[in-house]
View 1 (cartoon, rainbow, N blue to C red):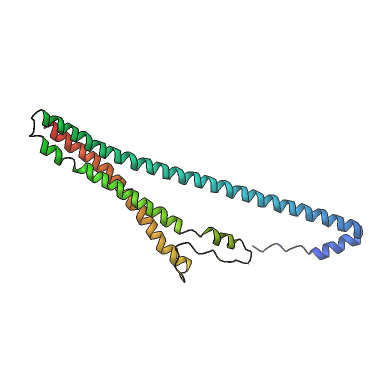
View 2 (cartoon, one colour):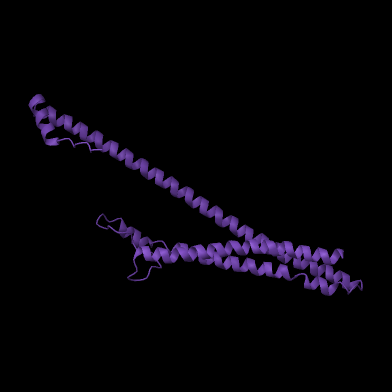
Amino acid sequence: MTAEPKPDVVAGMKALQSDLGDDLAKQVYADASASDRQTTRNHFEARMEYVRQVAQNSLAAENSVKEYGLQTLKWLFLLNAGAIALVLAYIGGKSADGKTAIVAPLALSTWPFMVGCVCVVLAGALSFFNFSYAVGSLPSPESLHKFLDPTGMSWPPAKMQNAGEDTPSFFKRFVRKIGLTRYFAIGLVFGSMFFFCYGVFRVLRVVLA
């Protein structure tokens, strides 16, 4: 497929001048140039509005994910810690009634809840590192401001990019860190759910035995 030939502006203007005269030809070209500039500006403003809306939606989705993640970690911690408190209260009631035979098995059955609490804490720590790595993979505001200079041809370096490290090597190194922290955090969240369910199973088995 061959590219369309570009119109010869000079030849076109000379043809208009010969047919319409200098003044009318200049007016025609001025009107055409103004129309082209307005069309280009409308297209640019439409692109800017699209980018702005995409950025806003992306930010809203990111904030929602963070909020859901924090709520999930909080409820998982409360579930496991609350289960420990309930079991200890139950043990205290049995001890007051003189039924001490069930105290030791019940106390031992609470260890999954403790592990679940530890999983929540570790998941929160990994989420913090994941967020820090994600922020560190972005350029600083000052670098982005300098990037707006028309003479700047390359993407500015990230905040945590080492001196002399090229961008592909940096992203290859950092994508691994971001992925590992995210997957480990998700795994610990599911682990906390599993240990809570396993702890409930162990407590019920002791109580109903």
